[in-house]
Amino acid sequence: MTCKTSVIKLGGSLITVKNDLRTINWSSLISASDQLSKYVKDGGRMIIVHGGGSFGHPAVKDVIMKRGRMDIKGASYVQEAMLSLATKVLKVLRAYEIDVTLHTTHTICDCENCSYKNVVRDYRNELVPMIYGDAIPCGEEFVVVSGDRLAAEIASLLNVDCLVYAVDVPGIIVNGKLIKRARVNEVLEFLGNTSDVTGGMRGKIVEASKALGKVGKIVIVGGRNNGIIRVLRGENVGTELVG
Ligand SMILES: Nc1ncnc2c1ncn2[C@@H]1O[C@H](COP(=O)(O)OP(=O)(O)OP(=O)(O)O)[C@@H](O)[C@H]1O
Ligand SMILES: [Mg+2]
Image (cartoon, rainbow, N blue to C red; front, side, top):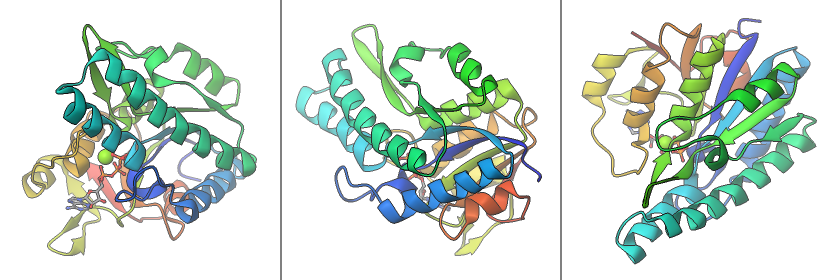
């Protein structure tokens, strides 16, 4: 097994239906949970991070639209949307016999930094900690911390073998083709800016690249069709991000 230790980010694009408000993509979530359960049975150790999808992103947009900016009261609304997604993910993972322990991100993070002390404690105790992208109060405003960033940070802290971003596409596509190895600077040139609050694919590459040199490998992969377990077992699928 190539990836003895991993941080796996389950993208909102994979586990929710992005265009349907607060809708879980059950078949993808179940498939991802099944793959992660196989990984645990293989002896793999992991931390799970998940994104916002059609729970988090529309909630942030809603707050800005209705309240004019991301104020502190809006944080509660976004937090509820994310917690509601997190508990659903948690239930499915547990149904697949994964010993998940949920850490609400807004209680471990402040404006700039997150404290991973208890996340690491639980990881060392052979539990599977889970955190997620969230809204963090910061003065009179709040900041949105992306699951992409959290995944790269915790992966770097623990120097895991594999940092895996599971999404709804097979990897990074350039001119209609999946690229197997992507150099950060080159790929950023291809990817335009997106309106997504956490930066879409571009934001993901920017955050993921911060873990280069601190983890064994970074892969962006389609989470369906066994993409996650295939990466974890050392197969060459998806797009590997290189410096
Ligand atoms: N060149 C590209 N290759 C692959 N995907 C791309 C590319 N450009 C844009 N994308 C889009 O990026 C999306 C993945 O980023 P997105 O932020 O939507 O998903 P996510 O991070 O899984 O979700 P969340 O932010 O909710 O966790 C894909 O669904 C795809 O539509
Ligand atoms: Mg995203």
